[in-house]
Image 1 (cartoon, helix red, strand yellow):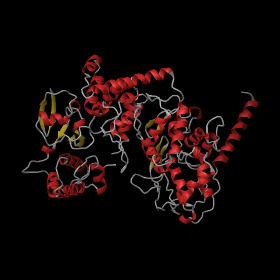
Image 2 (cartoon, one colour):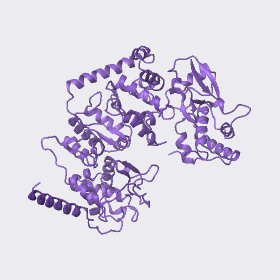
Image 3 (cartoon, chains in turn brown, cyan):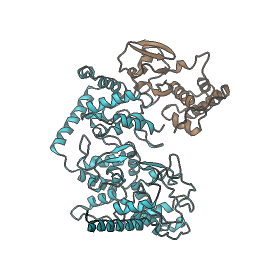
Length: 165
Length: 445
């Protein structure tokens, strides 16, 4: 048994330690937000957060995640009460087929937690890991900016804790 | 010590001091010129200069991340401090717009700027000194026809005494050998062309030759492996650590595309080099490959056996993909770090690297064939693990995610120990802690 902390809850998982987190989230914990895109760490659809950093859950085994804080899409809000980044993506209608969007939202969340008011260039740089086959990237960029503004309005005292590059 | 010897020593000391003083004095300034118009250069010579500049990889040190080409500002970390690549656009005030061809030639061949100040040897004039007149003319024409960009450079961050440029005069006296490339008549024209490009413009030795305590290349260890911004630049001579010995054809493919089926992908400071070599005349890259393959020589019988072993290792795992069972291996070892590392490899790396290199983007080189596993330092493997392999913007190339945020230091160490033992099959590295610390501190995000 491996113990994981997912969205603030302790979960016991009976799986091989080398199993990538993505399969444990989806198959053992029924957390289906993170998606299987390529399974090779090339597309970003499986992005979740570990200790506040965006990681690719399809290439990170659970053996390295004990005593670390895992956050998935389900941890950001609910259908009835979406979190600010989720809300911004809805308002900008940033999804077409929607398959990449959970990963996009998680990467945006990780960016804004560290850098609440990123520049356009910083957003592009940080989000460049995640791919969208439908080509919604321009809407995604707008959604990240909208989320940053919304989070700033909700909590004007927040300052950047670390700036990229 | 007898009186004669004391006097003799004093005399030698005085002579040395005088020579040093002479070397340290500022040289004459060459007259400034009006920046020449673009139309004053022959377009054919400019085009040739563009290809030469690509072989020299000038853009890499002389362009800041996200900055205008050749406008400078790129930090270059050296053991003596940080130096910033200068603005070499023809801007008259902040670039080299006022430099005549003679001033440009003097900088390239003697390491002295137009005003007569010594240039730091981070600018590889110890290589460019071998350039032909014709190539210098081409480079000058290319540089002077770029768009002038006004850009002040940040001051170099060099502690005392390295911030004193006159010391460079003494350095040159000790280590700098001026002079043209001397072809070897016993070798083919192709070999000689390759040797010229490698030794002069390509300045391969700047990274691939080890340097002494004063930062000069050790000529007797020519291309025997050196350091480049925290990365190890592997040996290009008979000591090449590549698990499978290189052929000229493979070197050509690697230099041209950054990728060869049986060798590692170009990473770190080598990435921009291969990016540039993609656009230069094919024949020039072929000659470089010919020369380097000759330098590496025929592999010894021992190396051949090792190579066949590595290839067999890769083939076995590839055949077993995707259901490779390593449990036996983990239990057999009994070593905690090795077991943890094996689990991390299985969860993070195997999906791509067990496939071996194939046409699709996620099919990556089998690690038994990679140089990062067999060199004497863990520096490269640690950097690739943390940063991944990220091609420059708008450059279609293979991409590997970095694991800096996914893995803790302890986990990176376990993984590296496992990979070294299982794929590199060499004695454990002793520098893992130190290299990991360096890579974590200097990591770009």
